[in-house]
Image (cartoon, rainbow, N blue to C red):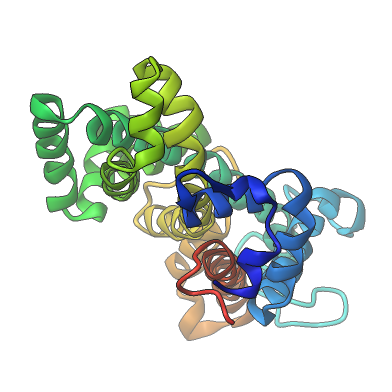
Length: 314
């Protein structure tokens, strides 16, 4: 038994013996919240990832206060178009004379919103489908998994393009739906495999033996033990969603009613900035995407290390 297991309350040691899944469930609740946070911030990836995310969240919230220009401010002076970086315009200006720094700062909110909301949709769908498929099994499992295999077999980019074409409108909500509806299949398969293992364990069988119904068993015994896995996967899904939006915007399928980092990249590339400059116009939104995705990836790996006893450092 590891030192971490010894710190958990005696409740984890029931007549069923030591249950590492129950221990991890408890690590996210009650008295062990502090212990979980200590383990998380003990990793350098956790500290760096949280710092990066908080930095971009701060920019998203307070961009309107600190940015010196309006995001819709267009210059009628030809001399203000595609200016190089300067003290007045640190990232230069675009083809309409707009300040690139202001556009990037305002695009932070939309990009993060897409990441979080699309994650919620894909995690919700994937978790529900995985729970139903793994717990009830039989013909339900066969049907659900065959549908899931269809989604997994189609390249995600092609699938997103098809769904975007079906939805028609290119606004913020439609792009979120496109990303969310194409990202649930992997989560469903992960949750299903965990549920298949959990429902054979003694604490679930004993709950059924004393008369617990299916919904009670799922709610009290199956779902709480799946939460740590879903939570760690959700963090990584945010990063994937932000990348997906950037890809759609680069293909002119992104939202046209809000400013996002992907849309800024697309407009920079469309005006051949990579050849004529100003180079910060195309570098900075791309760099923001890379850094924020790296931040969420660090947090995801740190959470996986904390919640998974096999990965936790002794």
